[in-house]
Length: 188
Image (cartoon, rainbow, N blue to C red; front, side, top):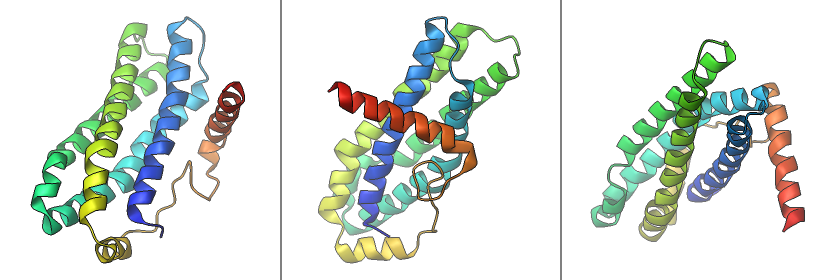
């Protein structure tokens, strides 16, 4: 496995692309047009599947190693586990709002938009905090041996959206993200 911190940073870049895709769909809905429901549903499923099964538990392991190596360096990341639990709850809330919307149950547009926007904002803040505080502290304090030991204990879990394997439920979403990224690069 690549350096565990590099993998976590790449996850953040990937999640930012995913949030951009979700934001485009939410903006479409807010403007009174129909978003791509398949993309919104794929995002809702992904945010339940990958972060809590792999990304956050790995960050928690890194935090434990950081605490053991240098408790002072870990202080800026205190509360990370609570933040992961809060993000997980927001992801479940968002997923529930999507399911309600998909089932065509009476749901107020504003409630759905509020739930989606709260999830997007919280996850963007969470990523920024980890990128600014947690990762630099871990990179400074943990040794290559520490990181190797952590990597040996990790499950081999391929990211279902951004990983090497093609997962049918995410093909359209991956295509949408890649297409938008290419369009954005061409516009720059």
